[in-house]
Image (cartoon, rainbow, N blue to C red; front, side, top):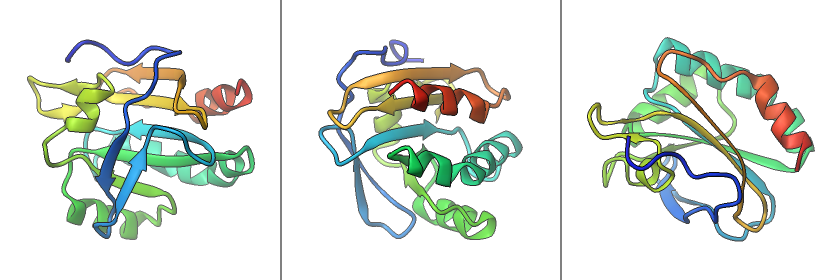
Length: 154
């Protein structure tokens, strides 16, 4: 992993990635709301699917708290679109495919040896400052309760 994840209090890098339809979505910088950015290693994998399903189930709670949810992986746009359509995700899935892992590198969660994003989550305030970070090792899901607690602390 390159350098380690961004710490709380860091100014989040501004990244622009394509969503499941190829439209550019910017994360970081000043925005209208707080943003929960969740990096996942692989589309369609068991643990990643379980994590995003849990986010989907709690999406209205996060939105009611004023938080925009986006998930990113190094998978291509077409794989992410198929995943979103299959599982009914109603938040943006962003492709960090090319340049491969650039956003994950910027947030310090790209695994250079394996070529994918680690399970890193970042809660950014509306000013683009990292207010909370959570990184879990491969195969270990992040619990939704951690997101709920982080959002309550905004």
